[in-house]
Image 1: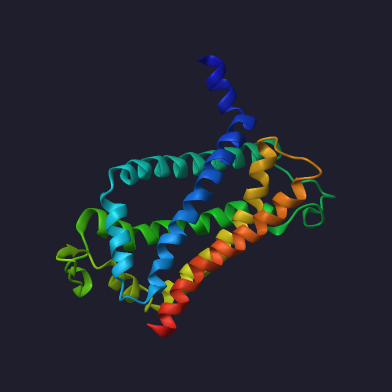
Image 2: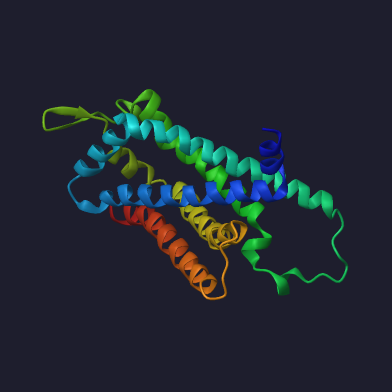
Length: 232
């Protein structure tokens, strides 16, 4: 057990954990985006409310939420540990160093991007997840439940519409998605590199796929608040 602890507490081990959790969180983003796109179905939120109810009450999904939270915790913790180790290893930068010539902007600012994403995540969870899971949305900001097929559901669709009528929340959401896109562009490629999955033939494809994936996913999330702000 000692070798296991030493391995995954080392710099390489922590990079592996960060890579695995990062790729896992990417899969979550895809699933979450697919569910959120039901907001555009044009059925006054029926499909979205059914989807939200399923996600809130399915025991498998609730179990996966715990796994998801642990993924976030390990990913953030390892990022903080690695950042601290890097600063400790080189407390003073090289006088002739030109980082802008040797690395991308996103790779040099992963800490900043991660902080923006974390702040947004806290706001987002407080606005949607906490009321839906722990307090319900009935009566929240004048919201009432909605009846679908003689079953009473929380009207999370109306909560979404109301939230995306607040201009500053829309701005925060869109800026955070831009930050997430940059974070993913660098993180996606770095994850495969840390796992040793590099090859002169396949690495260019991984880089291109990472950029396309990051832009499309984050654009999909960002377009939702923009749409409801102008068209709801």
